[in-house]
Each structure stands twice: as structure tokens, then as C-alpha cells.
Image 1: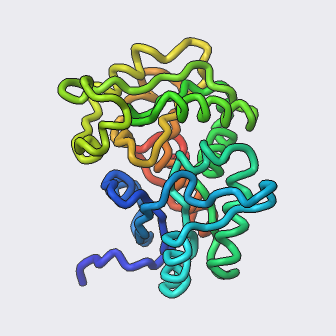
Image 2: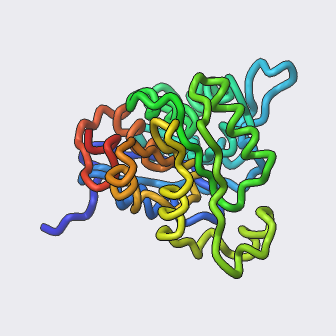
Length: 261
């Protein structure tokens, strides 16, 4: 019988930005045999679960609530809120509040997590405390600053922050104009790799490529070999943590120390 990629080991649900293609493509590339990936698309503003008055908790947007019902119905083992910006903009404590709200909506059979929590766990696992933070070209100055504050608040201050500089014609557009113009589906990685190698400071003990819509997992191994330091990406970290939460011990070569360890 031919392989039909049935979830013999785990079934993972992922909430992703409605108009992105990168998360599913990268997760399917990295997932070990026996693990299936199922996406729920979200079109809400950032963060997807706004703080309540007094920051006593968060309120899940309608797309998250719908996705939670669907994920519970199909029996996923883990549900990942795969949106770096929600964690970054939500700030300190948001990941924990969102995980609690997701858990209440999903039921006790599903383990929830967020991209921010996954990235922090991955950095800690690899012993990275001063990452070189690299972010997509479409991230605004405000989000870059919030990302630096987020890492600082969680004890892993960025050694430097770099926003990817795209080639023409994208370089003529402001960050908030790139997605509407179609950059989400027109990404390349060679230029990104060159910029990371050229600008990674000696003080960095690792690299963090943030943003689940940022195409980058194909260059993880090459960067680690050239820099002799671990590399964490948003989608790689969330897959790694989801596998841990699902009790899957299978490892994957070709996508960095994190998944191969």
C-alpha cells in the first residue's frame, strides 16, 4: 500500500495567517513520517487574542474559536497558535494567557501552545541567550521594537536586530505595502542567507529568524555550518515543541540542531 500520510504518531493543528503559504509548506517539509498537519486560517488583527480589561486574561477571536471547535472534532493532539506577531505584540504574559484560553476552548484532550512559547522553549533548549534577531521585510519598526522588548522581558535579549532587505521591486515599497503587493508568495532565501551571514554579530550565541510567514527553514543547516551557532526559526520551533507535546520522539535531519538533536 502507498503512503497516505495518516497520523499514526500525531495529528497537529496550526492556526495560520489567512493569506500565507509558508507555514504549511515548511511544516510539511520538516514533519517526520506519521505526523499530519492541519491548518485553520485566521484573518483577525494582531494579537489574535486581545487582552481583557486589566490584562486578567485574553479573548480569543472568532477564527480561533471556530478553529478550536474544528480541531477538537478531528482529534488533533496539539494545536499551535502559529503567529509570531501575536506573541510579540501581546507581550510578557500573553503566551500563557492565550494557552489557557485555547485550552478552555479545545478541551482537555488537546495540548495548546503559541509560537512565542515555542520559540522561547527552543532557545532555552539550545542554550541561546543572546540571539541575533532577524525579521521579515514586512514587519514595521513598531513590531521590531516590540520583538526586542519581548526577548528582553523573557531573559534572552537580542544581540542585534535585522530586518531582511528584499531585492527590487520590493525594496521600493514600505513594510506595510509588501503583503498587499504579493511578497508573501514571492520569497527567496539566498539573499536572506547572505544578509544573516554578513550581519550576524560575534556577540550572538545563536540566530532567531522570527515570523511564521518568513520562508527560511531551507537555509537552517547551511547557516549553522557557516556560523557554528544554532539557528531557530518560527516554524521549526513550533513543530519541534508540538512534537514534544505530542510525545513524538522522531527527529529530522536537514533542518538544524533543534530537530536533529
